[in-house]
Amino acid sequence: QVQLVESGGGLVQAGGSLRLSCAASGSINNINAMGWYRQAPGKQRELVADITSGGSTNYAGSVKGRFTISRDNAKNTVYLQMNSLKPEDTAVYYCNAVRSTWSGRYNYWGQGTQVTVSS
Image (cartoon, rainbow, N blue to C red; front, side, top):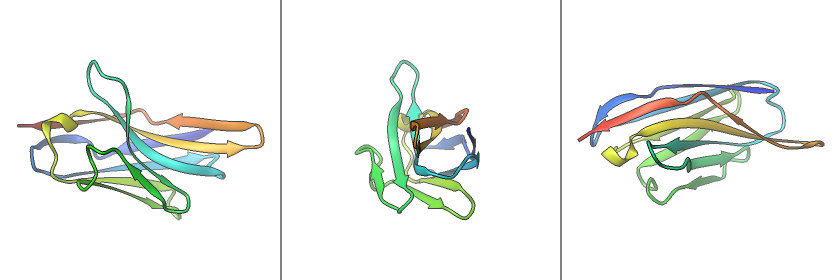
């Protein structure tokens, strides 16, 4: 099992910045990728950004140029720096980890952290 603990959400005005952190613990070997998803009220959960163990990154078009994902492998922590926040970025943000073993591919989720951007 992998446990993911998020922190850093909160309330910010439009144009402001927040930094989310997600620390992984437990069976962290063979984690291939970590990332952030978000879910706004009445909407489906969507990928925000992810990063592989090798450092390759992927971003949703709506956040490209504003958000930066990074990973500290020594601390088993992934970060999401969010700049130029917009009201439409308001959502619960979930940390995700993908782990591959001989028995299969597994997804793990954090408990979520609320990000609210006021106009």
